Image (cartoon, rainbow, N blue to C red; front, side, top):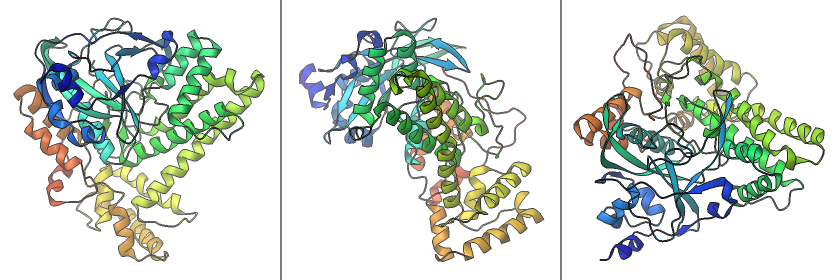
Length: 491
């Protein structure tokens, strides 16, 4: 089989709509060739949904595509330019270690970006080498696929390959490239870049492209750019609520890490909360807690305000009127977020209908969980199966009183309590990617080239609402430690 036929047989079906936008939006660039690529993991179900041939992807030429050593027919690698507020400070950015090789058109006609992360230097790399190491790439694979299984909009991971090269960080580490799949890589930072350094006409081109790609129901609206703003706000309100409901902490909610599509992106110093505490921070670089768990909704609103600022020239010819339209739209975020969060919390407690005192009931439980350092996921899991283990929280008089109020609340519903508990099973995961389990899998992979630990972990993470016996061990908490858990960007 020829090299060309092998690549065609893989099923790549590329279009390059982003590359047809103004040239200032990106840089054409081929990935850097690598020494000896080896496929570490392939996401077979995702590959199939993309219309790809799993067997061909695992061939020599298939792996070469994931390594950036072969460019499939129809691909057009580009590094995208964008800007962003990083910890509140605006700066010029861009794909510093990633290349969009093309947009895969699936058999169903869907369009997905295919991006190689860790593929080498770009014009936006600044002082970086544009490369990535195995641990962070596998970490993104694990967390992104866990998020997908939890029903949270996210970019996904198609494959990870090692490059056969050693990358110097704190020590020498194996180099790797992640193939990331996204609805698009349009970010708030993309609009900030064009707003700052482009023309109004280029901004309009970007906005129109975004509408066509993600929000096609704009034909009947009076102001399509106000519609765009409101739709992005709606998606982010729903997304952040989903994060909060499972205890996910992104860790670096810069504006360049907020997608227009409403997908979670850039799994750097992210982690899932164990003991419930709104002040929880895992990222080693977030020393002031800007992106703490409890701050995520307000940071999202702040980021969206920055997005709204970029659209002002398109919202109305009169700047004052444009600002008023933007402010009114942004003011809706808190209510939209709260509505999503409250509905999700009711589901976690088996509540089907709405009563005014529900929020007080929910906040009462969270307050006790915070006070007694209760595990977020396992507390809801215990309530789901009405198995109150011997924990500090469950042994208090406060909780006993709360439990009675909760049971009374369930009793006021038309649905039987059995239905409530089933509702809870569908909304309280049996398993999350516990931080110590993630580290366990990464250590085995990176230090021992043992990928079986990760494979087993991914298997149980793939069905978080299954509540099977094999998941029970993964719900156990880490042993006590005097050192707080810390995550790093992995650059």
